[in-house]
Amino acid sequence: MTKLCQWLCGLALLGSAWAALALAPPGLQPPAPLRQALLPLPIYLLVAFGCYSLATVGYRVATFNDCEEAAAELQEHIKAARADLRRRGLRL
Amino acid sequence: MAARGPGRVSVLLPTYNERDNLPLVVWLLVRTFNDSGIDFEIIIIDDGSPDGTQEVAQQLEKIYGSDKILLRPRARKLGLGTAYIHGMKYATGNFIVIMDADLSHHPKFIPEFIRKQKEGNFDIVSGTRYKGNGGVYGWDLKRKLISRGANFLTQVLLRPGASDLTGSFRLYRKEVLEKLIERCVSKGYVFQMEMIVRARQLGFTIGEVPISFVDRVYGESKLGGNEIVSFLKGLLTLFATT
Image (cartoon, rainbow over all chains, first blue to last red):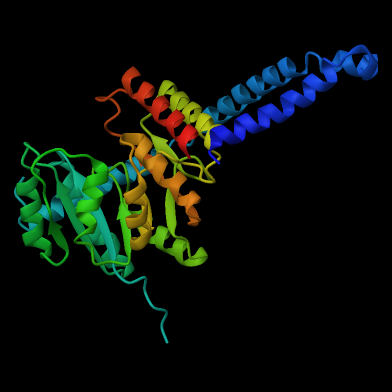
């Protein structure tokens, strides 16, 4: 099953559960407080996911390692490499 | 009895206009492998570079020997996937290392890849910039934001089981790389992503090693809108087809 299919199945499952409970005819409705929480739930979850995404990406950008030492080390290695290659007869 | 080495490691180096960097990366590779006692060969696949890369490669072959430096050029720029296929035909190692030839990937991590591979008997070891003390040098805030944002989106949509999907510094078992290349159809960044996604589909195991990525090219080649669009198209294609 492709990821797209998995998402569609998951959304269909959750969507129908939500619709069954939140949009039920008067006879089969769950108690009022539950219905009040259920109706805006999809929007709440979307907003919550949006906030989570921003926070996660923000955190990861802030803690993205800057490899200063690696860059400095590379410069050293480049110098050594050029000198040694010249000794071995490389003509650039 | 001493532990057996990993056998030979074949490094595939596709090049295009790398006349300045190629001797440096080859020198670093030779030194790394000699210092760690790992048997190796370096296969240089140049796509008809107009800047003299092939002449430099020939000099390197003379210096280090044609059993260590294999020149297998092609007539013109034909893409990364086919460069790997072409290079693999001549590879005699059990393990294949793919990496960039522009010094953004430092060969010093290759012995760590091999150590990791032995540790978990992994089919693939992927260098990651996003975990442990992996990281990047030379990126501004905007570039980091795009990178992390794209990676987050990829993780959410594909749940790939690897932290760095667009990275191209990896070690593969030879048979694994052969199987994967047959099945991958994308280009560019998405090609590297597709390799990992297909690897998981086929049940291959993936280990990770933090690496540092020193970007000296970013200043000249900004990440443009075009590349972002094609990345998104590729990501959605993988989402819908795997």
